[in-house]
Length: 174
Ligand code: URA
Image (cartoon, rainbow, N blue to C red; front, side, top):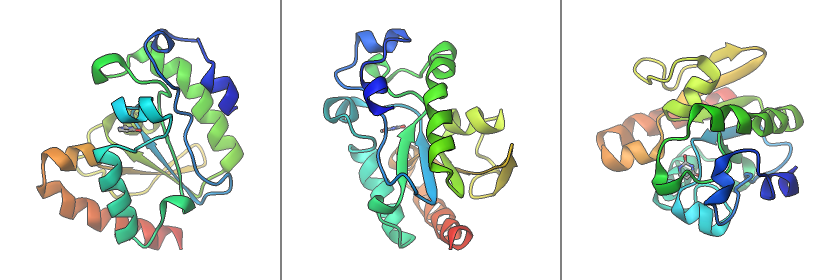
């Protein structure tokens, strides 16, 4: 599927991308993290969460005694929206077919959505408010909404909350 994603032209995002970013991690990962879409660094490298938000994600994973090598990391849209604008409804809808196939193959025990876009894809609502760190059953998937690491870069108060959520994630997984 990665080669299919890499040459995908199903939506307008292919026109401005450098590299598509299918996602990475073991095909039998217990947990899948789903972000919004690649940023500048990710577009350059073809890998998810390799910029500043990615550094914070790595830190959170370590805090929960999880390593990047253990988890599968991907995004709702696999190509960078130009200028990091929000992905549009039609782009999310078209691209999420790849995500569904990834979930079907990997069969993760839990899907952690990072931020509002990924959360609303699964739950229909995006606001984190009281939802973050909790477990939701959606069509036989276990979904755990988490704050997007970029949100904690802008609002350092969120870092402590994220740490707690990641710790509880570990307990759910093991
Ligand atoms: N933000 C995202 O949502 N995804 C990435 O891959 C990088 C930053």
